[in-house]
Image 1 (cartoon, rainbow, N blue to C red):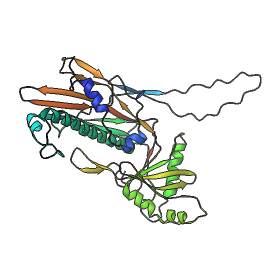
Image 2 (cartoon, one colour; image 1 turned 135 degrees about the vertical axis):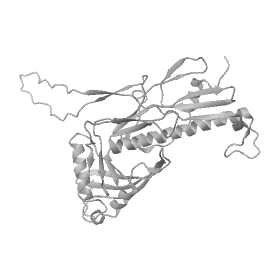
Image 3 (cartoon, helix red, strand yellow; image 1 turned 90 degrees about the horizontal axis):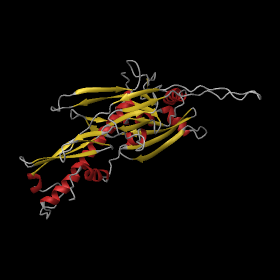
Image 4 (cartoon, rainbow, N blue to C red; image 1 turned 60 degrees about the vertical axis):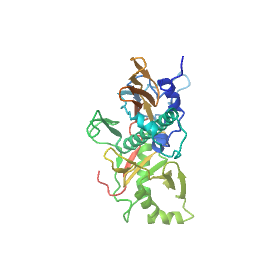
Length: 358
């Protein structure tokens, strides 16, 4: 049987071998376990169980034991959204010098075709990763996510929303009495209050994820600077440390026993309206811990040109090839069906640290 580079299974190997783009929010707070989080169905089932902090009972010597009832749980069904960028390859692309290619390149059209194929998959994979990072940021900020499904016109689409709480408003939001960039702000006190709310549910609080302006307010807060300068008080320290993808660890603070790393996230993206946006908007802070959620992937079903039959594939990224002989055009697609979810209801708190409007 002849080797066909455009066969979906062959393309899957090529896509999986590409170097992934770093995605801080998704990777740190919503990691994926390929054994349990990549589904073979289009829908995914998510189980939520409230924490249980009851003590084990003392038992009299002659009594065998005391029954502890199992706590109930809820199961939610979600349909992960479909993300599917595509690229077209025309006969002109095979004869035109590519970006970064030598002026008098000796590449044949067939060799340039393979090179463009891998480059297209790489760039489409990066765009999907940026979308997942934006979904992770929105889930952290709003406890849910709004996805715009586009059909033919990129300017129009149908919004589909998912929220991980009941009611009309997100309960995991805290607004300080005084903005953190104002005189009289109690930053450590606010962090302590939010950390205690998470601890009451048995959830950890080790990361304070902040926008650049909030990070600047923390580093210029007079109370924190005075305490850091007092060697007799262990409240933390200024601890600059560069992390991947535009993240900087700027400090470690001790909020009355709750030690948190302050991580400033400066990365941005271009949204659907061509507007440059920060993943963590101005004035926001998020208190949480690594692994507070997961990224799930639903199966992808697609019609294959090779046999005219629908096939279902399991994976994070599923490639597809299509050729239009009359127009001398080949198209490649890269499809993913991710869903960002918390491990527990309200696994984090958003702090309206500066100029709170919520």
